[in-house]
Length: 261
Image (cartoon, rainbow, N blue to C red; front, side):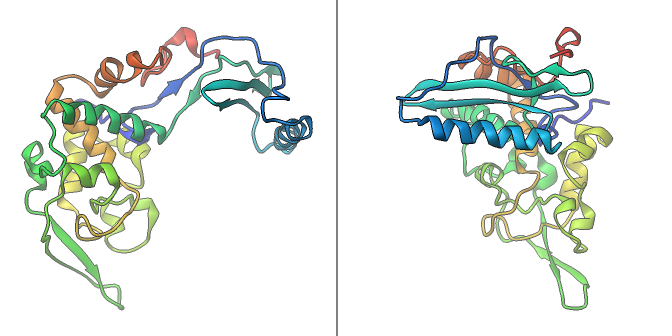
């Protein structure tokens, strides 16, 4: 069975184990004093990262600061591998987590531009399992009841987190217990078909279009993109987003030769 690709927290959203990105290898830029930055301010930035690394809050980082469209600061801090004392480099590869939600949404908007993904269309046009959803209500005694949803979940609801498909790990109500804890465990444990069936069978946390809640909306959006295109979400984003903006090292599947980075 095809495993679920999650666009959000599995690497945030729409990916299996490794959604990664890296800048091209460049030498660190010199301090940008005189470009709206002071030496005192730059020293405070350096001191912040030094304190975080010394306190084991992070092993290392790469900082990029742009001003007026130009990269003013671009430098590594700390370690790529602290145990091995391997210094951080500016071409290090990082897990992007929920930044995949933004990318999956941009990919979806390219289908909108082509007239293939109307924002107000119900998602049941592509995933009929979501046609007759129910909204959950929990009373003061913790008892769960459901009633038919007044509004369908639309494409726009997926994009803006107003769909009612919550993360199970974000609450302890009887409604939350119907849902996977988050994108990563869903991607590991469920196929795409199992994932959609599980969400469609769960009561919604709220009426679609009436409240904001961080959840599985972009994961479902990515699956719709796959249905429209006949390609994997990684293929969609490579063709429609990453290749257009020079993100040549961004992928859902980390190549073996890139693991040392």
